[in-house]
Image: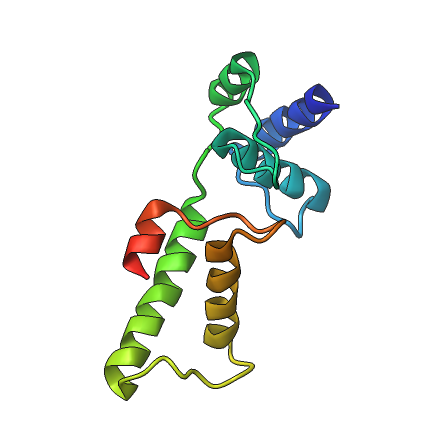
Length: 128
């Protein structure tokens, strides 16, 4: 099954010139791409996973982006929004049901190591 999805990603790259799959274009391939990043980091839920070197080499060969630049940019944008909020208001008591409030809740879940949630990186933990 891994090789089937890999070949689907190769076809996607051949058609689009990159491997940055969007959810709205192909949700199953998008989810698979996300899972490959988690597998490489060893963060597949509660199990430790060793990504086979042969599969890593295949992914590297097609130019797979192990780190999502889009995610990093979005995370830092929300972090900067939180910093600006704190600077303006002197606290972190963000209004409920706002995107920033939801983001803060997600960071708490990630820090707590909840199942099905990717953990925060060491850099993110230091920043927060």
